[in-house]
Length: 214
Length: 214
Image 1: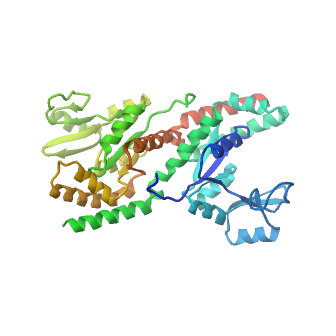
Image 2: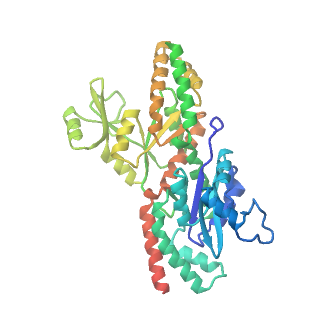
Image 3: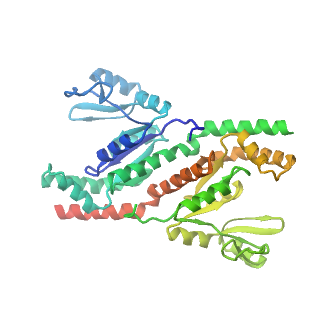
């Protein structure tokens, strides 16, 4: 829609382990323009090949705690002794540049984001069936039966939270799922609350022209 | 999404006179499947060629007033001595059959529908600019300057109600607008509240499989 310049949407994507989020997002980023990943801040050490500002913003524990205090994070959590969080400024900058920003995160973080950013769009990726999820976890060939059992159990628990999301996408085929995800994300730009600048400008133009007609 | 069978969405479409709703809907119905028009009930006489149950449900004044009393209408209004209204049963039937039902109606009726059917999706069609709306009204060649002036004034007033809608589509080009409208309407099927049957079935499957794993 070349005539309408709008801010991007903050898209929060969650899904069961094994549902195929990574493959779908790869397809989305390869086939479509205008997307940006949210970059997390963390206190953990960079691994070989990881680039600051690309894979993570690597910060000290002191700096991270300052970010918490100053409300610079949309959400944060700690995991095996390290902090992880979503810096608000980076997300805001990308949204202002017109990017749709994808934030891949688990349920608790997603719901925290929705509290801080009510216009965030929460999308849950689901498998077509429980059998298919099981087959996909099994098919990876890297996990023990015990781990697969635990993941299925976690999925069963998490399924109850899905109803708190805004939308779901079913991953039957990665490319088709990416196409539907893209259509869904693009349609968010047509939400009235994303378009208020355009609507108010048009209303003013109409009012001015009606005045002249009189 | 062949694996997921969902109910259609009730789409309420409004737009300024001259914005091109008719042309866009023609393109939508010609290029896409799965759509149905809502058929209105009216007490006015059929015109030559109009078919009962296709163009309108033609009913008596007594029957129409009974429909009002029995809450069989999603909205109704009277216009030059005749009643017009939207029978709920027809809309519900088409939605159950999986159709996305399009209801083209003005602002007051649209807001009444939203009250009765909160899951209805209100879409407003806008011109790219006030100038373009003016040119389109002028270009029809059938309207006097006075009528055009009145329509522009009405558009200016109506623009204030647009913010009560859910989405807008800009009609820059009828076919492109129809394609965006289609993507927007289809994406409604991915709303969580449209998908609860699927989600709950999946949750149950996952729970059953987790039990077996134990």
